[in-house]
Image (tube, rainbow, N blue to C red):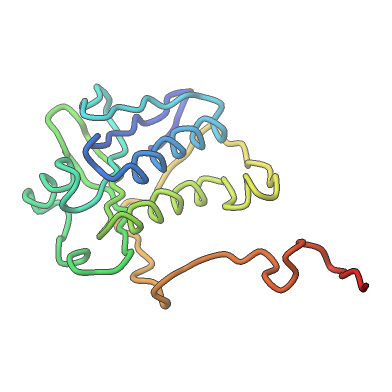
Length: 177
């Protein structure tokens, strides 16, 4: 359960993780609010009091992710030495008093960020929300299927977007002199 009956799962991050990961996790908090109409609690370095939570972080930078690796709740071999890979998985009993967590763990900074934005996409926030004003799909309740999800490492080393790089004015015509 990510959201149900006006309650949204709080997001736990380690404040010592990469600044980009912290920013993306704040975007996830905002996206959960846009989709459900209810605010999610954002808790850097403070384990929330809830039955179900979201944990986001990078291997080697997040104590919360590293502790789950030590507990064999996250398979480190899936992420170690990988390029921009992420896992989104459910784990049971991540902390005493917490029944379940949805974990977004990345092999590196960009892997974690891509995992966070993938969850946003799956709950109904288009990657084009900001650039193209794509409306957010509203839903009061959000659920995930238990298990592990990943897209693996990207097929190309560096990803990017190039907005009409052949016409710098971003238009379809050119002015002749």
